[in-house]
Image (tube, rainbow, N blue to C red; front, side, top):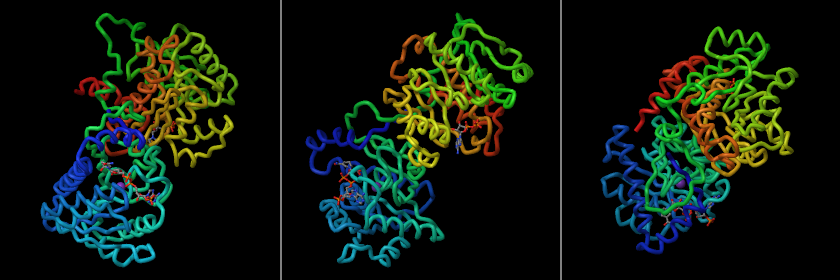
Length: 511
Ligand SMILES: NC(=O)C1=CN([C@@H]2O[C@H](COP(=O)(O)OP(=O)(O)OC[C@H]3O[C@@H](n4cnc5c(N)ncnc54)[C@H](OP(=O)(O)O)[C@@H]3O)[C@@H](O)[C@H]2O)[C@@H](O)CC1
Ligand SMILES: Nc1ncnc2c1ncn2[C@@H]1O[C@H](COP(=O)(O)OP(=O)(O)O)[C@@H](O)[C@H]1O
Ligand SMILES: [K+]
């Protein structure tokens, strides 16, 4: 599991260590890790250290101090190091250390505080590695001038260079929303981000996540509390799954009630059933009109048609809320879930049919457009573009407004529980962006809720912490199934479902 902590929590955890350790001890530790990451990256690229020039981009805070100390280490290891001082107040001791190690320093601001663009360009062109130490967790809002102009000029330069430099960000790519992953202004895209103490939420949430590259987390011994955001790995998912025991029978493994597909969209019934069956449940009970029921039976004769006892519900995939008959089936499933205190997935058409308030064991699974509509219907005018610009805050807002757990689909999936638990998963590639994969996901999640219904039903998990972890686990299984089905090429939704058993087996075998 990767755990991310907000800037304020990092500062609070840092404070006692700063007081107890010699001046700059934490900073030199951090800087050493940055220098090591640079050397490892050069090794990975097969570049010669002695022939490589590193350009330090130095801002006025401790983030610039990290870069200067890292530059000193690198200079001692035989690299050519130049520092572009993008502030009139660089970290004094870091600067002295860099100069002692023969780092060449350049003031890239003129007397009026404006960037000397020609000098910056010359320095940028000479370097094979740029180390971004402009701002870290101390930055507030979008980068201001002169840093905004410097970053914009460097990004343009990089795009024009025949051999693009490797960019290593210190702590975070300067200018990202550290706590929320938004990108309000120019940011230099990094190939590697070396982050101190713990990951930050912005490094695990889009759009900022896409600018951070490979993430290296450096342990500087911070005593941190509960994470603000987490990302599950396969071993975490293995702990959440409930594989069958010798004593199990089909009813104890969990029965999923499925209200998906309609005469207009019959395929969704097959896809959601496939997602559930391939993830593993005791039984799927399907409720739907004749056409989709027949289609389901052609593929999956094991599905039982008609109502009966279930441990969890999945409703809404392939349902048009304007289709009155089918809408009533969804409402009925939801009424039963609420009356029986059972967990449920509400997907696609069910989102528009959901009541104002829901329990945390109900998971809403919108994509960005559907989330925008959901928020707008609850009085918070939001566009799809707004959600895409700030998916993490949007999902959290929806969880707070509805009381439900929200799984926001996209390249990175965001899961937010009303009690505050937040997870993000990025396990699948963009081939997954194809019709019907969302229906499969609803089935996967339905199966996981049915497996763990004992822990969720009847008021268990009131704040949604476990529900959210199961939703994130569904995203991981689904994403990995997408990657496995794709093997670098296109997928169809049913092939994603077909890849699930192998993924479940791998996950259960993970250390
Ligand atoms: N504490 C430690 O020992 C350790 C800390 N560590 C490191 O410290 C970093 C945090 O350092 P920090 O607190 O000095 O803040 P930092 O991110 O450098 O930014 C402050 C500078 O940015 C400026 N600035 C702010 N907003 C801006 C904007 N929108 N646009 C433009 N400029 C803006 C601000 O200018 P001002 O607002 O003062 O004019 C000031 O100059 C952390 O990320 C990690 O790298 C590690 O070494 C581990 C040990
Ligand atoms: N660019 C992307 N990269 C990775 N996964 C994606 C991307 N775009 C969409 N996905 C995933 O594909 C699925 C699409 O679901 P959805 O939008 O509901 O499609 P549909 O309604 O056609 O089934 C979701 O699981 C989503 O997270
Ligand atoms: K930085």
